[in-house]
Amino acid sequence: MGKFSPRAVAGALKKRPLPAENAFLNTESVVIRITSIRETVRRREKHGTDTPEELHETFESRNSMRSDIRRFIRKIPKAELHIHLEGSLEPELMFAIAERNGVELPYHSVAEVRRAYRFTSLQSFLDIYYEGMHVLLQERDFHDMTAAYLARAHADTVRHAELFFDPQAHTERGIPLETVIGGIHSARVEMENRTGMSTRLIPCFLRHLSADSAMASLEDILRFRDLITGVGLDSSEVGNPPAKFTAVFNRARAEGLHVVAHAGEEGPPEYIRQAMDLLGSERIDHGVRCIGDPELVERLKNGQIPLTVCHLSNVRLRVFDTMADHNLKRLLDLGLRVTVNSDDPAYFGGYLTENYLAAQEALNLEPDDILTLARNSFLAAFLAPEEKGRYLEELDRFVSLFPHTQRGKRQ
Ligand code: ADE
Ligand code: ZN
Image (cartoon, rainbow, N blue to C red):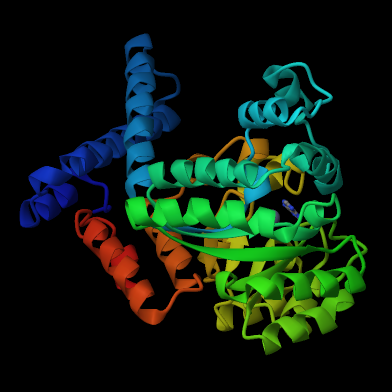
């Protein structure tokens, strides 16, 4: 008997009644709808087309199942580990900030901005992304951008967020680092005080610039050592291997900073190896191209090196043709520590809930897969063991409301 069969579910639910305050989760209806849709699909496969009534019923139940799954995904406690704050700058806010700063944008309307967001590669995105951040001049601008992201994340039940930003993209334009960090930090503190959500800051080096520039940026960053958890490496990957930044990351590690790096987004598996071996990267940002190297996959699995996967981003930047082609589920099934993240949500059409939902729909993720992804996000976070334990307990309490998600419980 399958885990979604009505008998299994009814039995399980009887054993563990839902507390009234969690009625929003409506487990029974999710499970029953999944079951009925699966039965309809099976029937259709066996007997050919449905009657118009059946088709209508399927359509209706698909829509309401989608909203139940969306609620489940939105409500599950989770962490976000790969979000570029500058990539969360929505066109509406970009216009508002441009206006108050007297900056002229090369677009006339929000709709025109969104129309420009048609990318053919990572570089085609980066050109527009760096242009967009030219509106950020004052501390208040960095504050407002960060506050807007954190509010969206909080609405998605993100309990912990590790925030990337690109210091060189601002200091190269003459904006002092204290302006950038001052704005970001005040928004973090406000959010933490208001909601209890925890955040960490991870400035990234722009790999298309020189190693000397990265080293100078690191020295600048170290003036704010207490506010910084780690350092990362981003921007144009191909032609800028991690090896270029070995000395910079040696210095960062000597300061006790955590280390992450984008690798294997467009670049080859060799860049993932370099990120681990030469930079000491504790997580790999993206890393999806590891799949071409079975030995590397085995190493990532054995070491449980987290991959911060951003599949909406990957499809928008043509790393994969369609969401159905994405290897997230494959990597998960191979036992890698995969996490789901939004990368640059203002540019790629979705924050964390949309990312989970897109993967669930296109790759047929089970509730257990969602739980594993949420659990992985806390396991991979740069948090003290007791903080991690607190979040994992919260997740366990959530899991206990879903008796049919055993795998999530066991891990
Ligand atoms: N900077 C912002 N988003 C990025 C991405 N997806 N890859 C590399 N650098 C980035
Ligand atoms: Zn990224």
